Length: 144
Image (tube, rainbow, N blue to C red; front, side, top):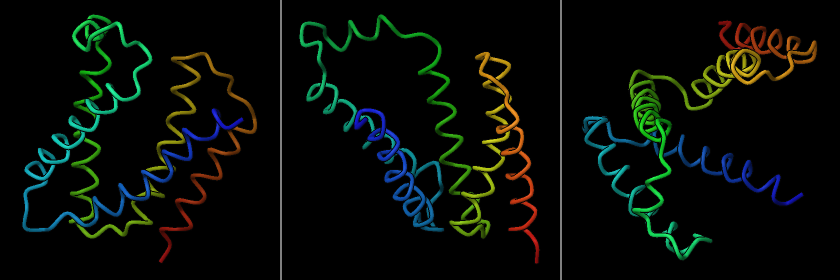
């Protein structure tokens, strides 16, 4: 059970700090200059964690890279877009709570259909009702 729960707990905890950090990037710095430090720190931490937690001590990092496909490269591009998008959204005046709720609602709706079309996940009435609830919720939180 713990192995099922801890990854999502990590995502939630990190997402809270992520939103706080993204909102706290000074308005006086270019978001991409800030992201160079973000990714430098991320690369160093990833390297340390690779050596500290890797179960495969007989394989070098370079040998690990032989297993790469397109996904990590596109993920790098996408993550920069996510980071920059949030920083620019906060600079434009979005509230931390609202930006997260709006993007998560749209994301949930889109991913239900991505799961169905790309990964053959089931599309149930519960999921469709969830889409409706997300869309209604977006309407409610954006009412003045």
